[in-house]
Length: 166
Image (tube, rainbow, N blue to C red):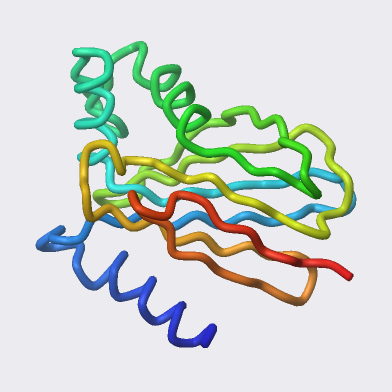
């Protein structure tokens, strides 16, 4: 199951980059026990984010390029925090946007939570880009120590719950 999930994620994210016929993002969520924080990395196509931000703000952001608008990073942070949230053990985790890194035609975006208790249940709300692209798929992998579990979220099913602890 995990191998199939990882293969699908790989094909969707890296196999289709030339044509970009897929509307997909990859989100990795890791619990850092030494800091008691959830660390989030999102790989998202930059042109899809540019379109979403343009429709929301009427600003050409040109994320990750030399022509990036001065307000682009703060607009991106607001958008990510509005479209993505996580409940840990039934309590909403508070996240902050840390920044982004360009990679080919995509961006890696980073979020980090304030300290949270060790996860037993994790509920993810992820509606990133689903307002723009009806067939947008947001692949989510949650890691804690030696295990990982995944979700496929989209416009029709924008949240999912995982039981991760005993």
